[in-house]
Image (cartoon, rainbow, N blue to C red; front, top):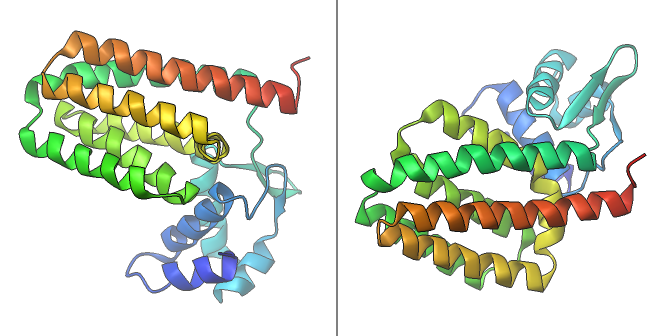
Length: 226
């Protein structure tokens, strides 16, 4: 899939133009169509979507707020580069927020939520597409956290997932990572089904911390810390 196909897909939806363009550019970044450090030319993107530069500029601001794009004065927009130090901080924040979310969610979790999360894991077992696996991964976690009834917290957690998503996809391409992640997901789901908050919190923290350590190691290997 390339940017032309992404643009065609999103423009069929009934949403505001900046949001649609942001969706397409976000997916292009997450899929690696746009690489980290690459500059995004507003005029080329505007031509691609058949719009003026104004909605493109608004879309880029959205992506800047999500941490995917960095806007440079007089130089334009660049796909953000995530450092090992930044990844470490993101994973630490994720751990704190998500463990709290699961603690709040479990007393309110319903059987229908457990069933939905289980179906997502089954779909993940069958999928080999890295992009789909990343989306299913977020859907699984979001399903478990939703009953916490903390929409701001969930929005913050989602934004943190987006920040590391493109790198997690690299990890998911490794079969041993995906198999281990799925095993941990099933263990977490079982703890939620048993309404065992302490076990769920412990399993989730281990799950996030382990993935975070691997991500930091990967980024350090790419660009060693100075």
